[in-house]
Image (tube, rainbow, N blue to C red; front, top):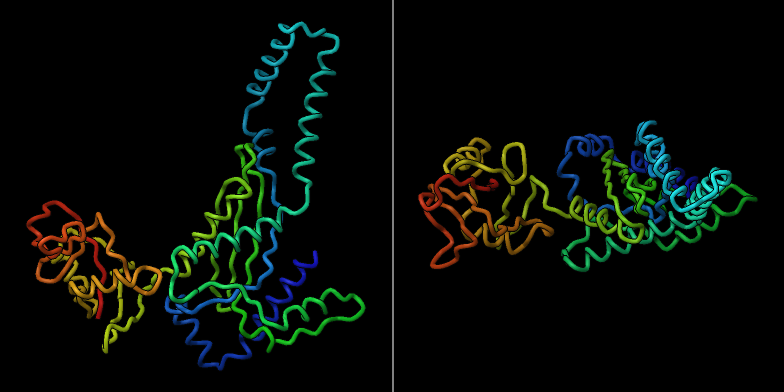
Length: 336
């Protein structure tokens, strides 16, 4: 209960301090910037409360079958017990005992405290593991942990006096994360978990995964990493002494076209162009997590003058004629 109250207090102060700290013109710019704002690293409040939701396992067990199906299963169970020689006079008592034992086991497993703490901890550990494995130059998603934080939490725990939260102490905070979990409909011990990330700028992100409690957050950690770390369009990247703007494709980041000429025309309509061979190569080396775009193998990339960049065919050159790839689709993005 304390964590929930502290979370909403932080969110209220965060929103208030964000509006106060931004000049009027900056607030308008923030709302209008939309996609470009996703490049800014975000700092999330370190406490991630999880609330237990409806037990979908018991719900589906009760309502996932028709009454006739339930009666057929019950009848089959009775027949099996009679074949084993159970006295019919003790039949109902035995069935009730078995049912009570099953319900008791579920109650003990479901009432054990600490599931929310485990989910919060495994989410942080999973996210850090992804960052260590992929090693981006800049971390765009981190947990806020200033030195005055312990003092703030100590004051909030004190019931004798109302703690005064100073907005200046949390001006580096970008938002909060919270979630829900429930036992999945499969009734095999796995959880259905949702995580929500609310930022002070107005953006909200939602992630969901299903799996065993000790593994489910790995999936969500990867989702969070890819959402906040992957290259967004438009963005700018410095190549040597020049600055290259990644515009993307019309309506998307990386688009697909039936021919390089069609992709080239789409870029011209945006006052942009297709990347050169050197630009494709450099952006691929930079990678998806540092502001570039990986030229993945198995794809053909459109170039100007009806040429194709084929990473799978490096010899003698990955730049090929479109005539070598009849009936293929071509990936592309525009730059300027």
